[in-house]
Image (cartoon, rainbow, N blue to C red; front, side, top):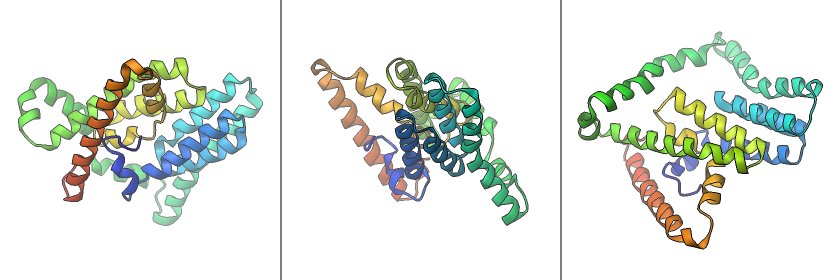
Length: 235
């Protein structure tokens, strides 16, 4: 996790490190069946990032799997969603527009710009994708990481606890479908990635694979960090 290709964002002025803390804390409380504490942390996660709603989804799934009834699941869901609701209300108070977040995001581009454009580019103009704008190579790296993470989802649900599996699965699938821009850093808080990969690569006969993956990831992280430091677009 510490040498993932985009791990340098944990020390940049982005929400990745805070969001990671909230994801891990929610899983921590859910594993101990401290549902209200998990719900409060999920509320903080939804206030931090819109995809923080995946955190309450994972907490609710874990609670359901442990036999928690509907009478407790509904208020738990309300607590988890309260973070994003509070954020929207704050926007209404501060800038007189509760949908200011979505208006701002629309200026950055939508699904057509962040996914469909690259689908057409990779399929119709692969040479341009590889030899044209060097930023396209970052998107290719993002997509490859996304595909690896998607491949790990079944292992998460088979071998990890319900909260970790569902939170990570929702983050991976949701982010991959929504955007390929910045996908590498958006995937980092899906902690099930690292646990599932560790389970798959456990055993002495896979030592070489583990070392090769860690070394490759560290090299990639170092290169991306240097590019980011000199102002190259790597998100």
